[in-house]
Length: 148
Image (cartoon, rainbow, N blue to C red):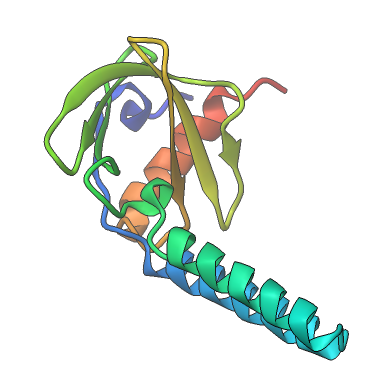
């Protein structure tokens, strides 16, 4: 039995993911703690800690999680097709298709797109960007597409 929701357009307005920021921060803290627990020579430990700090500065607001002007903040999955419309936070819109390399897990969605110009874009959804009903509908429709 097919649900009418599977034939409806899905319009998603995603917020930036605070959960993504917390995960990136936690991973960097763990890495810094492991560097110092390994007790490398002082200069090597400080160099590794500096590199991890630089990494944190670069990754603390990832575009893939909804931060920055190039972040995907509005996704429209058109009814009865595999076509998507992607909109960035700067307002730029483009058509795209969802790639088979996308990942659907209960705690994580990785949506990989190929834009009309051939470039690829990714949006990671940890679950705090959408309300529960939108997330459930998106996950169900994505799982219905997966073979097997």
